[in-house]
Length: 103
Image (cartoon, rainbow, N blue to C red; front, side):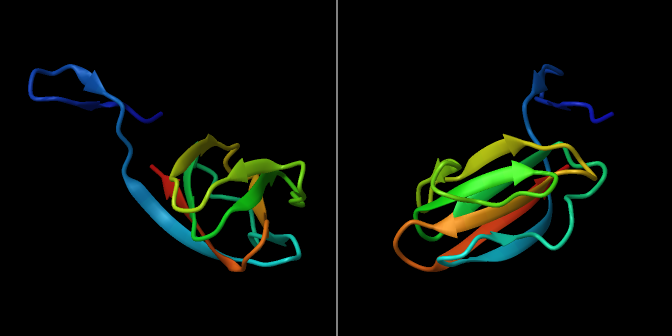
């Protein structure tokens, strides 16, 4: 169980340490992580270099019905560690998706 970080007065603050980062190519075809996120991961931070759609599931396939992730807009998503993976597909241009597992 992860404990929240504390400020100088001992009050809990929402903070997480960046862990492993995965880079996925964003293309016209759905691209997924090769394996699920780490067993202990509960949150991922996603940043894309182009507008795209993102799917999170045990065996995801991204399509236009998946979550819209605008370019250069960091988003945090809850995941089930050891089970969930991510998949991405472009809207118009190729790019990259950076997925950081938060500890």
